[in-house]
Image (cartoon, rainbow, N blue to C red; front, side):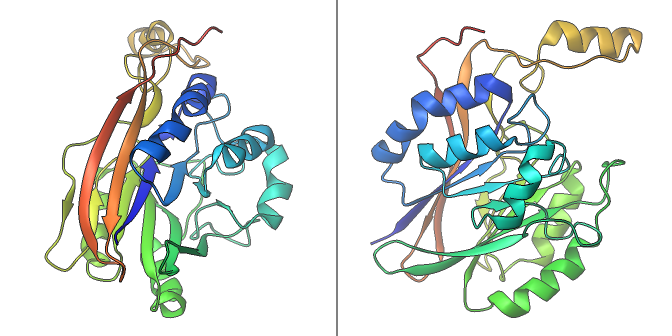
Amino acid sequence: MSIKILWVGEPVGSPGVFTLRYMLKDVIKNYSIDFTVVQADSCTNGQGLGKTHAFYLHKLGVDVLCLGEHAFRQLDIVPVLKKSNWILRPANVSGDGPGRGWIVKEIGNSKLKVAVVNLIGQRGFSRFHADSPYTAFDNIYQELKDCVILIDFHAAMTAEKLSFAHYVDGKAALLAGSHTKVLTGDEKISSQGTAYISCCGRTGSSTGVLGTNPHIAIKNFRFGIPVIHKSWHNDLELQGIILELSDSGKPLHIERIRLQCKEEFHA
């Protein structure tokens, strides 16, 4: 029997969390999902993950939450990161940052050992200092050789994601790109057995500017006025991928999903 993993694109603000509230349970049931990962770096006000949202998503049925350049933006999450075994911050954070960058879980009837690894790219994040993801992966891989490795690679450049995908080809079962919040159509499984997609998209508004209010974004780009982006709430969707693994952990199929939320969000 195969194992199905749901990998959810970034929920953006309250509309994104709202979408998961109304859709996640049914998606898990309808697609026979065994394990759920959410890229949660934009959950709280579009910047990071707050404590309340973290525990709420876990209660909804999320097994692992991954973060990115906003990992430490919400200060109340820092004590949680120190103790949690289900929230990850990038493993290649410079220095001795709080929390952990990877976790091993047993899933499915076969108790398959799956390691979720959270890494971040080095280009385009001026406020987040990261060490080499290549060196970090090499060190982690020595401990996780006997596990099925699933990587959230939070990076701003597609070229950086593709380069890293080639580097881990045959070593990781999945490299799921995140950060850019646009669901890409390049999902594939390599000949060496690594599933890949450049970006798992976003959860929340499908018609805003990366999940945020387009009118505010226009002011920013047209006039160069510094703005505080706010979440947009029209045309809500749950985006991401479903990865099917064999009992031994070999990727069998990767599928993009875009599912409309029938509930309306009221701010």
